[in-house]
Image 1 (tube, rainbow, N blue to C red):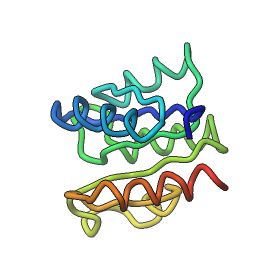
Image 2 (cartoon, one colour):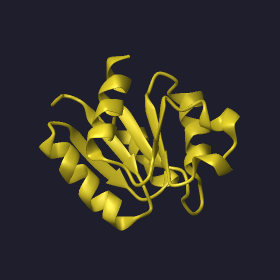
Image 3 (cartoon, rainbow, N blue to C red):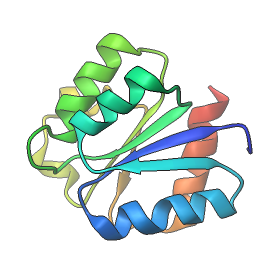
Image 4 (cartoon, rainbow, N blue to C red):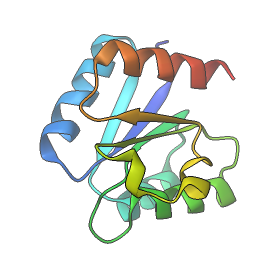
Length: 119
């Protein structure tokens, strides 16, 4: 696990602060940014093995980010998180490699991460 770097994209400060710490303790390298724009900027300078993004964010939504990522970095696994899966466009949501409902249990997230990285 230790060689995998995960980029977390979430506008909620608690997620940005705690999720990287948890994933680091589990053996990953994890970095968090607060918007899709920041994520795209980060990816211009750095490589990652996976992205975890929230859907509901001001400015660029997680689905907008997903569309850009799948066009530019098609082989990069993207896990999309949301508190409400039902209100989003299924055809766009289905482009994600995985979906995780908030609130989530870290063990569920870890299984999804491992499944995405093994593909």
